[in-house]
Length: 170
Image 1 (spheres, helix red, strand yellow):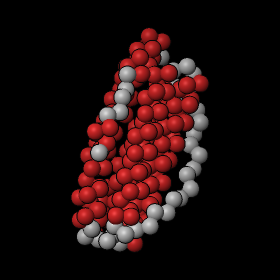
Image 2 (tube, helix red, strand yellow):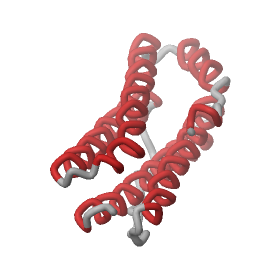
Image 3 (tube, rainbow, N blue to C red):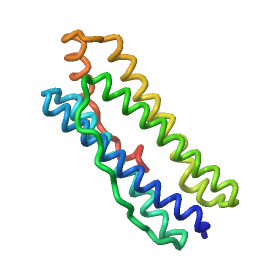
């Protein structure tokens, strides 16, 4: 059974993951309003991925005899000046989430909660490496594109091709 400290932190992580989904949905809505449909599509799928992450915590807590406590979700920012600014914010947010996952690992180790670390958190540590790398790559590509209409158009087309592979989320 997980400690009370760990259960509190896991419930807080559900909130973090749900806010992530809200943030990416907000970015998607902003891109949609700017007729950047590929960017909007990418962010909408990212929001769906974050919901899957929240559900991993949601499903795990009862497995360790804990109670799920859903916390309020803050309203995210609504607009971004440029696609680059949105993806820079997404990258910073993913670094924030990586820090939160690392904090959970620290709690697990301090509490000798190896079940939570191995069963749940190890997957998230690896996932965050991928999340940060992907956001960083898009930031770098957008920096190369600059204010070029052609560059933004090409990135919009590239991001429109994103798919989520369900097998990767297990």
